[in-house]
Image (cartoon, rainbow, N blue to C red; front, top):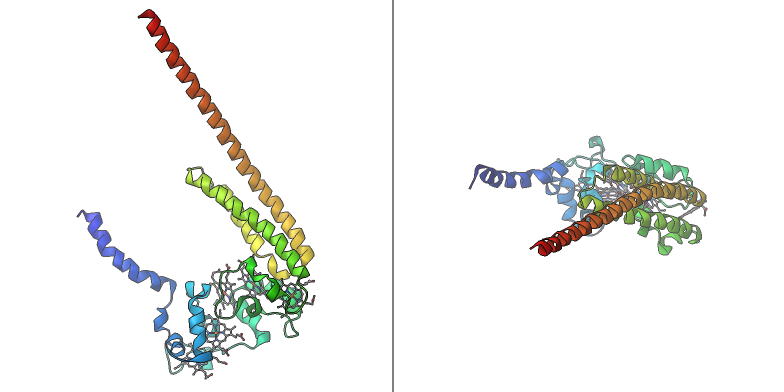
Length: 266
Ligand code: HEC
Ligand code: HEC
Ligand code: HEC
Ligand code: HEC
Ligand code: HEC
């Protein structure tokens, strides 16, 4: 085995050891909240099972990141003196989640939903759940959830506008990936799409039908600019292909001609 090979053999298990530590401040099984709650039945143990499948678990956001407390000292884990916050009551939930999701909290508080907080409006947990929070998508907007408190009509308009934009984004993402795979420099296209996609994902929480429609139109206009760049790429590709074909046919003709000439002189 060469030097590089033996180095890799030595380093790989080390890397495997380090990776989970890098994403978690401590291994999940070292967090006392998970040890103790995980061993309990019913409502006290359930959060652990649900949380394990969440995007928060994936990103190293454990119990104590949300609830506070001391994840290393079982005896004092839930002591307010160690920063334990307990479980938030309904009106406190948006601020609880909004410590990390600052922009979303701001949009939510300014919306009809935020204004109805504590008076029948939905909180973050109504739409995202508390422990099994998964990557957000338009699937959250469905008739069952959104017609609990009012008619589905306005929700439907928002969903349709957003779905149309999302479909465009997904299609363009695929086209860019194809060019990238062929070695084209797609950096500026990717950057453009990334910015538009981020703007798109901040659209929902204001739940203002007119605003979502207006913003969607603006976002789609920006997407069409990127689309035009892609079409220009397609066309220059096409031209190069045709030019290539012309050159190849010309050379073939020339070769044939030369062959015939030689035959005539032989
Ligand atoms: C030694 C066991 C044990 C440890 C360690 C532990 N818990 Fe608990 N936890 C419990 C029990 C039992 C209850 C339910 C009874 C109660 O509220 O005291 C509970 C209740 C809770 C509640 C609900 C409180 C409420 O107001 O309804 C939360 C939230 C919670 N724990 C989070 C945590 C977090 C976060 C940690 C780690 C920093 C942690 N627990 C560590 C045993 C534990
Ligand atoms: C993303 C933030 C978040 C994380 C991470 C989180 N929780 Fe919670 N938890 C909440 C919220 C919000 C509530 C109150 C939810 C409600 O009223 O629906 C809650 C409620 C609870 C309750 C009270 C349950 C009940 O039904 O009364 C317990 C116990 C609890 N959490 C334990 C845990 C444990 C243990 C972990 C780690 C495995 C954990 N939580 C991780 C946000 C979180
Ligand atoms: C301690 C910080 C923290 C708290 C508190 C917190 N989150 Fe998160 N949340 C994160 C991180 C980190 C991610 C993963 C990275 C990302 O997507 O932003 C995430 C991801 C998410 C996502 C997926 C985002 C996406 O890109 O699709 C949702 C939805 C979410 N959190 C909702 C909540 C809700 C609801 C609460 C309250 C119950 C909450 N979060 C509390 C840090 C937090
Ligand atoms: C009425 C339902 C509803 C409520 C209430 C709600 N959300 Fe959302 N949230 C959604 C939907 C739908 C999306 C997905 C939109 C999309 O696909 O772009 C989303 C997306 C997100 C994302 C990902 C956004 C991004 O920029 O990538 C986060 C994080 C999030 N919500 C957190 C929260 C937090 C925190 C609260 C409370 C302050 C909250 N949500 C309240 C429905 C809701
Ligand atoms: C827990 C109750 C509840 C749930 C669940 C709920 N809403 Fe609402 N929603 C309200 C209340 C309260 C208002 C304010 C009064 C009104 O306009 O009906 C509101 C208003 C709205 C508005 C009008 C906003 C405006 O500025 O005119 C839209 C759009 C909306 N909700 C969309 C949704 C969508 C989409 C969902 C599902 C993801 C949803 N709602 C789920 C309670 C809820």
